Image (cartoon, rainbow, N blue to C red; front, side):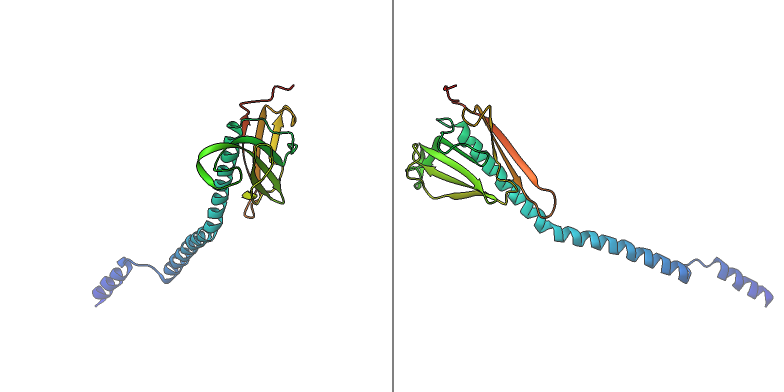
Length: 192
């Protein structure tokens, strides 16, 4: 029988497998990896709506800046003196697709005075007759601004050749972001 015992003992030593300690360590490591992956996934799911709203705000801002610069480029008259151009306000006589200045939309364009005014974290657009009379309703074109200093003029506000437009938006989930553009006026004033 001693030969059988030796053979059984040899078989037991050759058997592969894991000890209880090895299984516990592997299970613990597996749970840590799965927990980390779940945490990253949950964080991504929770931040997605915030990222989506930030992207939507950026798209709205880009569209607004493009609209303002387009109207400045096609302007007929340099920024009128009344209202006086400031960092938070600009007015220009330009073409708009409306039946009457400040009225309903139309398929053809007519010259009207367009005034952009920024205050209290938002910018509005008002369309009036070229002389500034009969203004239409104020329409909000941007909100959530960190600063209402949107417009810059070069060389001066009284005789600009260039108008810059820059929107700085506050962002609750991170640093504020700024979008900007500028226009060299097509018809600068000749009154220097």
